[in-house]
Amino acid sequence: MGLLVVLASGGGQLTATRPVVEYGQQLFNTADHPREDVPTRADGLPPETAGLHADFRRPEPDNQVFGFESHDPMLAEANGTSYLVVGTDSDPNLYRSNTPTEPGSWRLVDDDYLADRFEFDSLVEIGDRYVVYGNGNVYTARSMTADDWTVRNDNTGFRDLGAYYDEESGLVHVYYEYGSAAGYSGKKIGHAVSPNGVSNWTVYPPVWTAPDGYGVGDFDIVERSDRLYVFGDYDPHHPRYNVSVWVNDDPYSGFTQLDAPAVAPQHGESTASDGYGVGDPSVLRLDNGRYLMLANGYANDTGPSRLHYYVGTIENESRSAMRAAPDTQTGLAAA
Image (cartoon, rainbow, N blue to C red; front, side, top):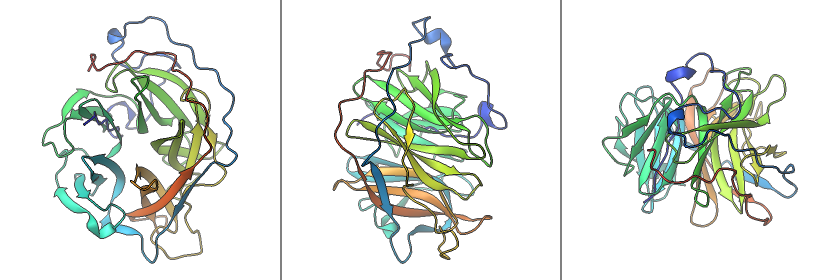
């Protein structure tokens, strides 16, 4: 089993206003960083997006997973079992399933999971641990069903992020809401890197900027055929989101948004409970090459938000492997 890292918003420095962080500045635990210089950003041309698409379908007649109000799903897989952490009105619940594309298959494991933690954003698996980023903190455990998670680092300053562990370089990349925009999302897709997913973060330039009036946030990351796909909320008015996709084969340079969203709400065309907005995606690869997406769905501008599922594919052409990262430090020693 690897190390699972979960990132989530809430608490710390990001409750009201975002801290001002210069690009390349060490955000936290600077004393742990063995270098004084900041690695230069990788050079690269804008990625080619012709022929790339992420197509997810809305199962009929009803694609709700649960009947109760929920938010911020997080999917993981361990030992052949799929796990779901999803927020409720109180603490997050932990579910598991052996057939995750069947809504009725999810079974409650813990209704007081990571108690006093309201929501989570993303997770990665590194080595023999799971690492969770939640409420501005970083937690680790050796099992998804662990009763106790160790707080490894607090107040990371990264809001509504998605995490990706690059096995080749040993680095953890997070892409998060940066700056202010309309509604509840950020103006840019921020980018930070850690050699262990816990501490020693280096902040790099944002990889994408939204047009005026639009917001972007709540990311999840998928790697396929040497490309990174960033799934996230995108729309000018909360919660009238769609799930859009940004892609690059270089984790450091600017990403390009795909022309079509992965999931779009059926504005004015349906009374479906996700017909007004869809956001907070979490994506899990299935054994048959397809992908499962769980996301919040809204029937109108006042909610409630309900968990919905979508099944789809991510297709692209083969390209050369990602360019080497500018900093090749690895390991969990700092954690």
